[in-house]
Image (tube, rainbow, N blue to C red; front, side, top):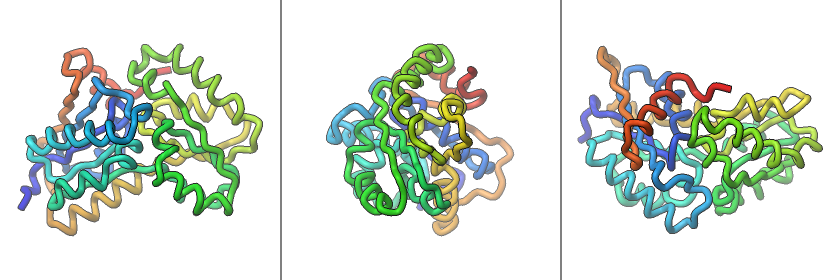
Length: 260
């Protein structure tokens, strides 16, 4: 039986999952967290599914040595490519994965939905099934964004490269009457304002973070692992690129985001 005082593990291919961590930390204020960024192997979204599965397995094995009581896969690509294998390997640990919040946008009645994601996320069966299900109900525009997560890995220092690539990627989408944007990569919320500024009309942004926070809360309650008091909360950062500079970047992104 896990100790309810144990931390929750959160991992991503790099810095993107820190945006998910921000929401989890707000919704679960009494929980300790360990964030692991596999920045040495980022981005996952331009690798093949087998490689992503092995990398994600290596990360969750590392988090297990930290005695985490649950894990959030804060990476759409890793969720799509590896979640079944990870839950099979750790059947007694709650493992939750994030995925593009397309259903949320459709349920809200949006009619022209732009889904931005990594090439691998948008090519895998999980997303293709969502597309087949919801496509007849609304106009869905899938936009693979190769290289974007890689530039966001640089933090604020990458802004010039981020803006240049974003302008090229989004140019074809501006012809459509987009009313919602689904951010299908956890890196992208760090540049949410840059994305929405491209549109003349108001757009609603969907990340799926609140949903995964609710699901995590429910699973912890169900297994009596939810903490009600924590007077010395700890949020720890780990990285496969284990340098002081990288860890400082993680902390800065958690506290301040990307400063335009």
